[in-house]
Amino acid sequence: MVRNLNIPAESFNELLDWLDPDREVAAEKYLQLRQGLEKIFLWEHSLDPEGLTDQAIDRVVKNIQELRQTYTGDPQRYFFGVAKKLIWEHRRFIKNQTTLDDSAAEKPSETQDEILEMRQDCLDSCLNTLKPEQRKLILSYYEDTKRAKIEHRAKLANELGLSPETLRVRTSRIRVSLNQCIKQCLRKKQQGN
Amino acid sequence: MKEQILTNEAIREFLLGRVSEEERHRIELIFLTDPALKERILVAEQQLVDDYLDGSLSDNDRKNFLLQYSQTTAQKEELGIAQFTQELLAKRAAESRELVVPARSFWRRLATPRFLVPIAVAAVLVIVLGVFWLKWQTTKQQHLAIEQEMAQLNTPESIKQTTPRVVLELAPITSRSIGPQSELVRRPDLGVVELKLRLIQTEATRYNAKLERVDDSESLSVNSLQINNNHTIQLRVPARVLVKGLYKLTLTGMTADGTTSSVQEYQFTVREE
Image 1 (cartoon, rainbow over the protein chains, first blue to last red):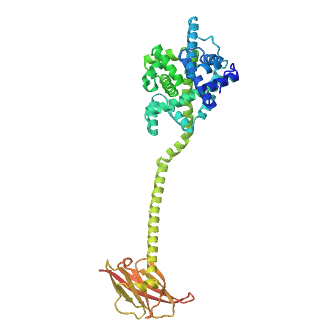
Image 2: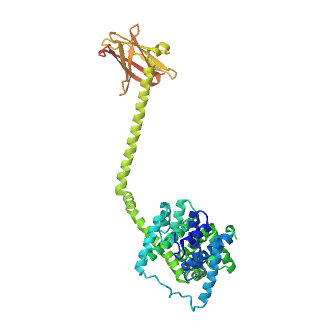
Image 3: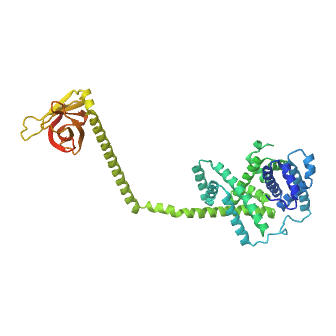
């Protein structure tokens, strides 16, 4: 589980306890929460969704002891409130800039070839985390390109006894988990460099 | 707003940025707190990204999509990962397909006339041989079953307990045999026929009988037949196995020590009623 290293271990444990008394469930909720916050920041055109996610968690953790005693609702709603506040602050900050172009932001130091290699490695290792039938399905789904793709997918759906729409939902679900895995993998590789 | 009243169309409008600020706020909150809705939105987003990458979005949707998903470096990076993943999946799919191509071409090669004709001939031969083997096996089984039935009919107990309706008395063939051939008239209701075989030499303790139709290669055998007081042997045969024709019956006498003591032959004809 990825923990913001700015957060002391004790406070992080308190955060997990607040999310759920069961540590495993709490850890899963934490991961889902991070992914959810990051996606919301991305939708809101934040320049650094991952950094803002850390900030939102930092803000909550600072008050975790007080929150656990006073706040009675769903912790995720509280996080959402903090995130929205950060978005407003972020927007005010953006207004003061002349452009949305964030090209001045920190760029990864890797070359294009290194990035390509990292992505290939991550895709291959993430494909290996899928169940064999999921891997087979996703590879079959993306087998053909352009016009042949439509016919191929219709045939595939027919073979599996599914409607094309159900097949699309099923493969999209696999893609979602594959994307999350690839993002985490790339992040780990970048942090390792 | 609950998941069930959030239609796929509403989700798509939200993702394309075509909802009010209030609606956006509500959907984002449920996205964070409702795992089922979160999954639906992520799946819908993936489909939207796929449509964009496939170039199947309308001009208006494409414009909205780029406004929502291609404004910041983080968004462009995310889109880049999606595009790269799709391309690499297609590449990996092609690679895995190539791995199975040799197997396919092998079968295709077999489907050419050069291989197809010998395969077809071999298949026909196998089928014909199979049919013959099956027929031979069936005949063999039927033959064994008749012999078992005859053995049962000719046990001393069976012979004492039942009396057949038709008895055909036969004398052995000798060099001086003259007179008409013994004849059996076959009727559908005959059941069991008894052949009463007169003996010339009676030093044997038991007899083995072999019944064969002169025009046939097959024969039926019954062993350990016993002699009656009147120097005859009773051999009972199911009438259904006796078809029209000339029959030869060989009776081999066996002594107590198992050696052959005498061979006597009989003949009779069977005709249909």
